[in-house]
Length: 250
Figure 1 (tube, rainbow, N blue to C red):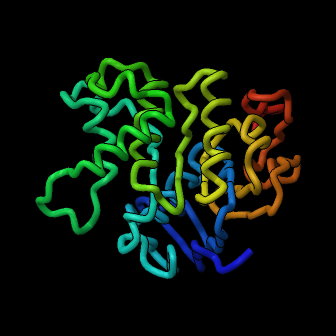
Figure 2 (cartoon, rainbow, N blue to C red):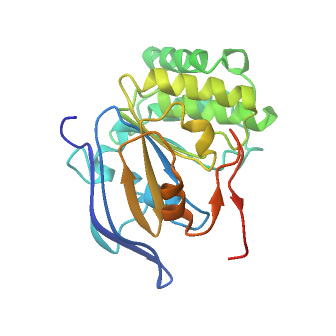
Figure 3 (spheres, rainbow, N blue to C red):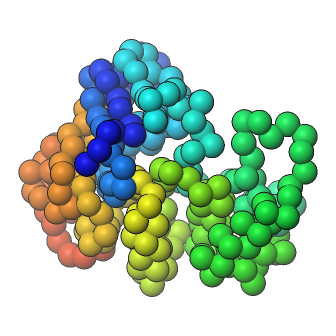
């Protein structure tokens, strides 16, 4: 299993004095493929932002590759939840993906031939080369999602975080996406936030349940116990690809 590449110890986080995460301890090992599941407002996105260094914990420590997240941001890929923000901004698909080549030492250097070749390679993996010169605002939600995934992959990250990556993608596109992620997982550690836990269960290696606190499970199977821990309400596994069904008022 090797040495953990992510280590979170006794982390607490509050929004306006309201506890969102409490006493969180978590480790991620190389080449794991983790599904982060839990209810809306349970702290999944907050936990992700703490690992990205976009937020700082009120208490406790977050270490990525033994350092603070800010120091190793160039080794991390990130696909945000909302890819529709600023979709009318006049920028092309190529320009969006090129942003993934930025590093802390960037300063004023120009994009190189190697940068542009990496962009074409990333777009090819996502089958988006045809749209390389298109304005990002002209693409569908699913196509924009592919572009942002390409942006995350263009720097060859060692760990990849995805926040609800299939939110704007149809069923066929979801299968293609997770097939690609499974291939990338051969050399990249992946953590994906998802409500569609039945769909991702065919691809992941472990499950982490988040609902203010965190429970890790070293198995890909989503069990009733995990759902009870995550949602703290009566939930039934109904069918592949369907969200959870609440069985009584709670």
